[in-house]
Length: 96
Length: 191
Image 1 (tube, rainbow over the protein chains, first blue to last red):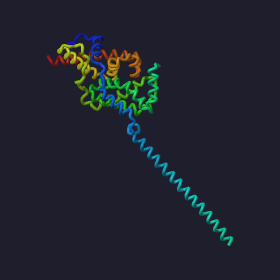
Image 2: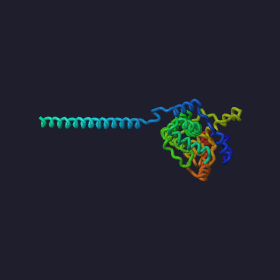
Image 3: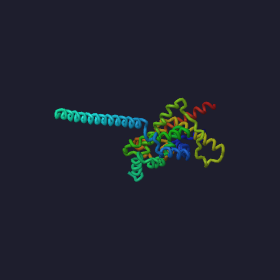
Image 4: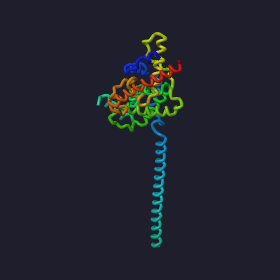
């Protein structure tokens, strides 16, 4: 500890810090692998599972409402055809 | 605003949709963030793990980043600071981690005894530094490892240049006191 035990003035502490706190280089393999993981778009990184669930739920609701609308349209058409048929039958009956 | 700063803001705005833009930001900052985490944790493996988490989090939230006149690095340092704080909380049972693999720049010292003494001195100083409050550690890392001027450190730490100077002065005083205390403890044990 002889080095530090010397008179600890501001300059000396700064010199010691400059000698101890030196920049370190991360491993090149680590840097390139992490970059690869970050830059390559991966579904599980960009989209969170909640967004995926939200998209699926929206799709199900959209399909259900579209199907409901199609069934109503079909029933309406059938009803219209029924009314027209009945009127035709009635007019035939009156003519006879 | 400098050309580099405006270039960086443009990169950040593109990074949300363009992976290559984020890759460029990563290239610019990975070593700084790694150094910061390494000196806060004292372990290469943990520094790599936490650096990866910093950039994964940054990628997830880069779309939410708002330029408020501070450099993008300040945002990354804040993420790193929070992750390191969590790391310390998780490992509170062993607050001091030995820097066994750390090899300081001792090329100028050739004598084995002098080399051993210099190494011992470095270890002791790093131990003392790691006992300082987080913001003081951050200041020393930015000043000595990154060699940033007080104004830039102030931007990163969200303080004025004057506040940084004052904090630095208090940090050096605190370091001096702690080194003396540590030496007294060592001398007490050896005598």
